[in-house]
Figure 1: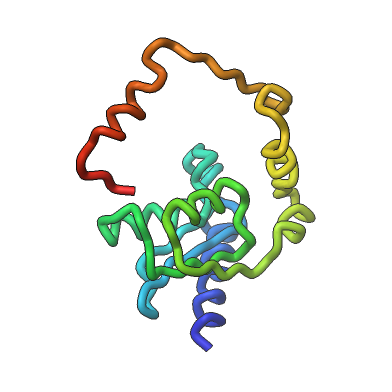
Figure 2: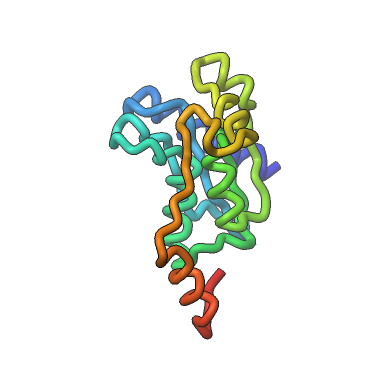
Length: 155
């Protein structure tokens, strides 16, 4: 079964990342037409980038390989259920399917608990643990209006 093979590779990437790279216990691969086109590993602490999750790294590499910001027809295999940030990247990249091994509950048991982010999303912006406030300068809508007028858009 090809899905099991690709998942084993994603998990092996995660294990290698912990044992030899000093990174977190997460790995991911993007597959297109039965071939791995990119590999990602958690590099948050190794490159000091909070967005360098395995899924995001794999998506970035796959987009570079495909020369496109959309990964339609591609599948993601990840060693753990994606966090909210990675989930957003997955939807924006338009991946066809996502397969995961460990659950978010498994990750929480070893200190990677994203439940607080999920709960923050349901709060009004000004009530979040990092308060967010809207400011409206007079040029607020100029970029959106320019986009509306643009004849050839890439979504």
